[in-house]
Amino acid sequence: MTQPSRLSIKRHIRSLGLAQQRSNVDTATLVGTILRDWSSHVHPSLPKPSLPFSNLLASEPEVSAFVALLEQLTFLEATYWLSSSYAILAEDSYRKKMAMFFTPVSLTEGLLSDLSNQGTDFGSCSFMDPACGGAAFLAPIALRMRTALFAKGLSPRKILEHIEIHLHGTDLDLTLCELSKHFLCMALHNEIRKSGYFPKFNVQHANSLTDLHADMGKIDVIVCNPPYRKMTANELEPLRSVYADVIQSQPNLYCLFITLCIRLLRDGGRAALVTPTSFLSGQYFSRLRKFLATHTDIEHIGMVSDRQGVFIDVEQETTLSVFRRRLEERSTPACANVSVVSRMGKYKNVGKCILPNSGVAWPIPRSIGDVALIRTICLSEFRLADYGYKVRIGAYVWNRDKRPKFESIQAAMRANANSVMPLLWSRDISQRGVVKIDEDSKLNSAYRFVDLGGRTSSSIITSPCVVLQRVTSNEQPHRLVAATVSSDIFDTYGGFIGENHVVILEQVTSQPILSPENLAELLSTYTVDRYFRCISGATNVSAFELNQLALPDPIVLQEALHNGNTWDDAVIKGYQVVLEH
Image (cartoon, rainbow, N blue to C red; front, side):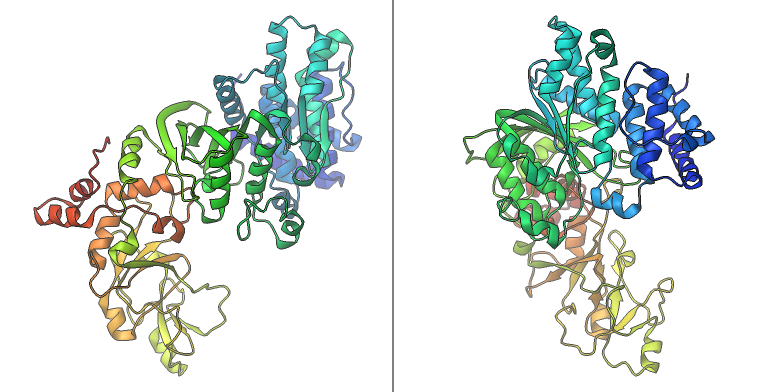
């Protein structure tokens, strides 16, 4: 039988919302009703789930159709989609607050296989997921534990008793906790049926960031897809003292969860985590990188090659990481194996990389050829500041700024606006282009001029510069989309102001090593762009990462250009690296 597509399953889930509205029940009852019907069909000997049930809802055709769909899927795929239906149909504000985005089965299985390859024994270790959601990890771990214990000759009852003691989960959502418990019963239904023993699985409704003191330093293996979103000041305040060593500015929730996962481990224990890639390079994860490089052996980093279609309703670059706890702190840089992971959870080894413990961005190879590139380029001491440029971010936020805006200079003149400045947008920037502004340019009805109320604002750029698009993705031919700003803008208006999706590399010396035109050429070369991809873990082209971008020796670069080399060849000579395309 052909497996239903992701798109068709999502359509089924959306139709469940209509049945939910007609029956006037909450999402917990919807999921509980589906779970009971599904479980009673496939495992009638199991006790009924504890979640609420509605006879009226059970009679709805959309519910019957979804139960039939679950029965077409593998067990783990079905648990994933039932959990996901709870998240999709929950109120948007609640889903965002709880950060309910569950791990696809392919990545779950890939990460657990990675753990096994690292030497984890599923038949003896204790396992915990402190953000267990819909048992995305608990259920497959239980299945692997059962297989390992059966191979050791344990009886069905002994297998259940072992898993009761050695498998733990916590979550902030009570419905998901109850869902996880019943998924575990379904995963181990053969043992339950044969033994007549009904286990009490250790899945607790709790705030893991504050309630797991008794487990610190005791767990063999942590497996987790931590929730990720920016934390509010109110929820962060009571946690500041506990997580002071990793908190910077307004941290992301998953930063604290990564720290928690490491602290829960015994010496030598492992944490296998599914997270965004932003912790690898983001400015406000600097302390976390120091913490990880100091307190763990970073055994494996798997970069998921596809950011689309991994998590439902969100585009997120993802990494699968394995850390081994070490109580003896390291004072030297860490070394990690790196793989590229397909959306289907298949690993392709790339090589080893050195990860500095100073908090700077970690250069992570994305292909085999990147390993040699990183090894050599990291030795370069030259940065944008050495070339005579300062990184700035456009200061104008269009939907917050209340100052008068105009579509054209003529409109500004009619309004007697005497301090107007041209406004540059990200869409003005094209690779190796020159940004110009026509006086009557409307830029697809967007505002082109803004009245700053004076010409002394520090947000005005008055020096020659290079501008870059601040948001790009790995799917684009270039992550560094760089252009120069026409001298006419400075001659006519005295400068410009950048919208906050524009990165500005402002010339700060009268004689920089490269002119803005040549700097844009340099940033557009294959090698510089390739290295930037290795130190960038997010779609934002951040000032933090740009300031760490290693550049070629300028003397060697200029000599190579003078001798007739192309920009790409000159950059390779300046870095003294041999590339494998």
